[in-house]
Length: 426
Image 1 (cartoon, helix red, strand yellow):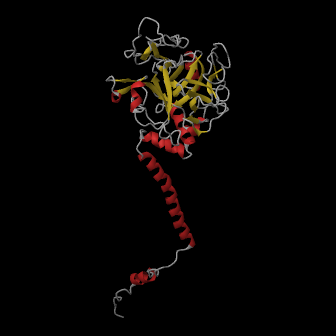
Image 2 (cartoon, helix red, strand yellow):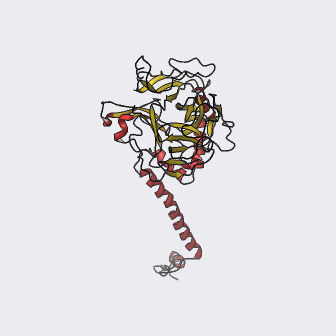
């Protein structure tokens, strides 16, 4: 039989192709239930993931004074992820803590120290200059360490503030932490809310207003975010967050005097109170000698030193918050009151809850409370006018040059509440 070529499309390859080629599915063929659920699941996941992404994007892009990192951190705390952030921060700070030993890499600058004023005693009521702050045991002081230096203006011939710097302990000797002593007889304290904390609407601005800047001499940070503060916030007749009995409280009276104590024991609400900022529990207590202006009498009627609160290191009852561990050494801040009523602010690096309390005890505090922590939130600035009589020329100087925020913090709207210090009119 003669050989003949297969017809096109009829050979083995053609037959195989015909056998394996199937017609396209008719249009509108319904998907199987499994495929439909896959599609629905993907759509739901995309939708769910887009919500936090959009929320984070909005938080990061909203104009304010916070850095991108700070905005992202605030967003995590707002969205119930603070425990993750706390663990990450605790791990990072524990791995990157301050070194042991060594000497400070800078001198204590006193070039901006105020003049001591006239040699004749001031006629206005004022507190005596505080005793110098002792350095930790075994530490050889550097020049001016622990020596109170006058800073800020005179009021009625008396010195409004003194400042000094000291090592936090006998181990981390390369660190210098800052202290400021303030005479409430010569200054007025005012609490300002932030744009984010404590939340709510306020008649008081989130910055020092221009018309008050010529009287502004200092400002410092407030406490934790309210969700972490374990306490409340009261300002100008409005309770923005409920006040807690037993909470450590910075109380400012309508006459501008401020004090620190325990709410419900040392203070109770009355018409003479202008502001209350609570934060955790007291880190120093049981001292006495200073009567609370317009409030309850002092627990002790004689000047006695304060004591650090029991359990500062282990924080078993959660009295000092869940943000970082109390043994983690980081930037921390505190405010306290002395036996004669002076207000003392302290802050700096390399501080745990216990060493922060020790710093305030060495400065003479009989009661003290922790304020905010971390380098982004701890701030103390002094303010002066470059041109006399011109409020627009007022600018700030940081107490500690290595603190993170700039000297002009609080001259623009700030996210967190803060305390401004103004010279009294005498």
